[in-house]
Amino acid sequence: MEIRQASAGDASAACAVIRRSIVELCTLDHKSDAVLVAVEHGVILGVAAATNAGEITLNYVSPNARFRGVSRALLSALESRIRERGNQRCTLSSTATARRFYVANGYAEDEVPATKFGIPSYRMSKALGR
Image 1: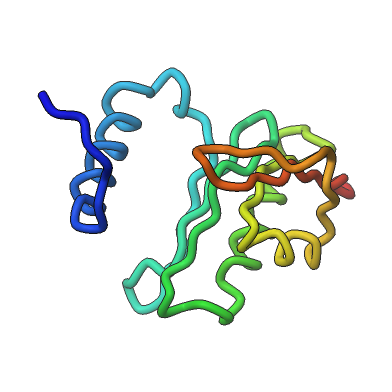
Image 2 (image 1 turned 180 degrees about the vertical axis):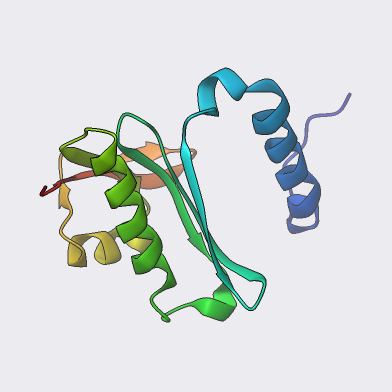
């Protein structure tokens, strides 16, 4: 076995490993998570997920769909699911890239920025209305 720095060419295989690991090995951890997709003409434009505890764990959009409201629609749908599950607050860790998006959608920073996977991470939350 060799351990090396990942390269862009590894992306597809690495994503397949992560997917299989979640689906096949982590069902106890993810079985009730809300995982949503935005679809247009049979093509997935974005993927978002949140835990039962109200934490948004991902919100990704295809570069082809950027600035079309896909991420905002996914965020709104996740917030609705989180509210339906009895949570009054939604939390997330934002990247620097998405930080302004979340602030524009009512999220506030909860603490000093940290680092997650070597990337600046901003803990944010939003109170959910009924």
